[in-house]
Image (cartoon, rainbow, N blue to C red; front, side, top):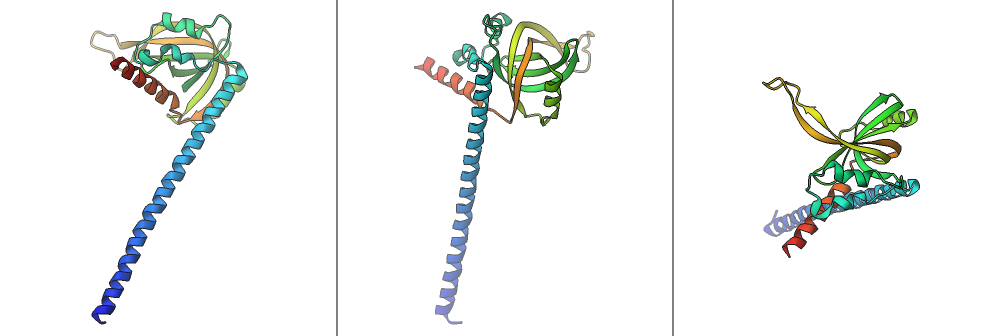
Length: 215
């Protein structure tokens, strides 16, 4: 093979390699763009389903505004939560919550969820439900990150204490931490999977508030 022919071969190989690299990154970029668009579409669909669920039941969707912004990192007291949760007009609230348990109760069945009033304050939801609702929630995926949109009418809010840790301390008592429990009736719920928009919105509101304070 002459030197000219060798140069031509190497030039062709170089072009092929460069084109292969470009094609790879282009296809990878297109794949990521497609996934991002699909994720955005899924999030939009879930958000629309949440709004429809709230509208269908006349539920308050924006109740967290009372505890957002500059209060997003406050540890809320029961006396602050009760007037927002227990409404004089009887309207239910829509919560974004994680499932904790399904129990039997004197009235029938009880579903236990956990939600957040802001970035810092968690609230335990203890909701009376029908047999059909209990069976429905037990048929949903049981992955740890799965969440629900829950429409509930809250009848009472109280504080309590929960034991933490399995081993007793040296003084014979286990550690406890205060929890806020909101009890009421479950109206309707929707499994929404790994939904995080509520947390992102709380973070954004808190960040915006912090920026305003600096100005």
